[in-house]
Length: 117
Image (cartoon, helix red, strand yellow):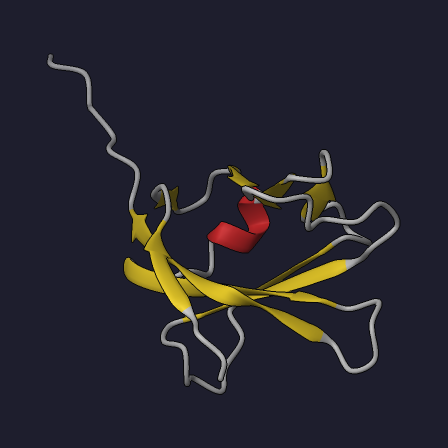
């Protein structure tokens, strides 16, 4: 039986870079492993809004227990305000191994403040 946990992550500001470090309780992020994540509006949505991979430094192994996820500003520009989900897969295994969690990320427009005349 597979269990998936949904956890809320920090807000993504549309048009800005975003980073999050994920820390596991056990050493599960092996050296040399590769990862990919996809962002969608909902877990069952067919359309992928953004992809992050180890190859493009969107998923970086920091240690055996820490991964860092990163989105570039050009990736966040296309995200809709509201909420999106991000899932993560280890891609160097056959078949790929889903890591068993989804991050639900709030997506917000940045606050802009005009100058008072």
